[in-house]
Image (cartoon, rainbow over all chains, first blue to last red; front, side, top):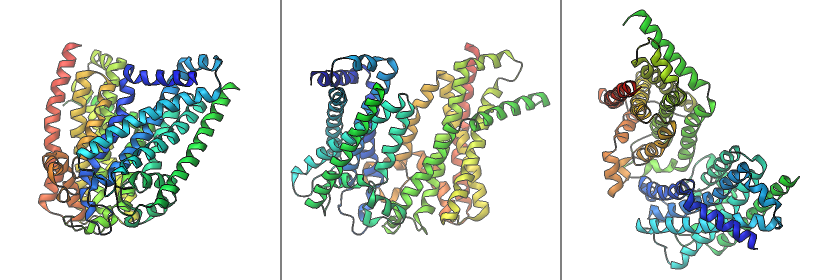
Length: 251
Length: 259
């Protein structure tokens, strides 16, 4: 366990040492919540839109985006460590593979919490308010941690397999597409055409539904349960993807 | 202008165009991402065309074309400025200064590449989106005006970015300006009409020149051909281009003097 904590602390220290690697991932979701809420303010006038505040719709999207980037950030760091040879030395240490993998996860969760807090504060400053239960804010953190877990496993798995910056491009593109091909911009009922089908079947839509619980009308316990199942399943698969990738490095 | 000078300018322009074509990793994002956003927007905001304040359009696709053209051209124009900065970094710029070719050719060559690319992008977006139901209400003449507008927008942005390339001599600094363009684009009416925004967003979009640039293209797509629409599509980028060329020429003179 001390190995994972040490790796996590090292990763977090790198935020201070190399802020240029962390700040864009932090500022991007802030920009998203600010720009989307203002640019698309008019969409709340569409009949059936589940909130009269556009920021209530876009805050959860920006939170999940920021948390996913926090997860991917550990993948970027891993590429750097693999290229500099630092990771080879770590693998020679008498620590279990599980602990070595857990370190980046701990760092990613911490980074995700920073992103969720910052984006939420900005969202509230822009007028986001839970509709009913104030505890709805917790749903943002649950979804944020969930998507950071998925993003971390995906990012690490790709980093272990490619070992160079090609992995970074694939990480960003796949997660970007994955999150935008959901109901990130408008509710599924309001969509028209191909995206409606894609968003309905995209499991990340369910994660967004968890993040939106309490911020828009119509959320239910069923949405929470389904979203949690999706996060657990995708998070486990992503962990497995990362773990098998780490094993491959040993071969 | 002598024949030799013209030949040198053509050669540098050809080099610029070829260098863009030889880098698919640079070309593809500025072609594909705007189309992706159009596809996403058309499906997401298809029903938004009936909300109060939204311009009268047949479909969101018609509305979105202008935003995608300007988005693609803005991002594509960074490519030529980055290439100019790379020329400085790699020493090619200094080698050109040793030749008897006109100094202005270094800038003109790169801007010609940007203009050709901007023109091609406008044509590409229209051709790709036509089978999906895009209609250009102003007809062929409007389309020609849009192509000229795309070319001039590329010149305008390319000139401003080239000034930055010449001042800094750093491709990283030019690429670093990408977020600024992103912000300008998002806080404009590129993706949604100004009439549906309110408060500070509306005021920023009202002050943002990108709003008027996009709306010129848009008025040719969703409205009939008119002098005002053509003038807006061509005059705004032309005015920015004049200013941008002035700045970039001054930067070029400084760089040449320093070299």
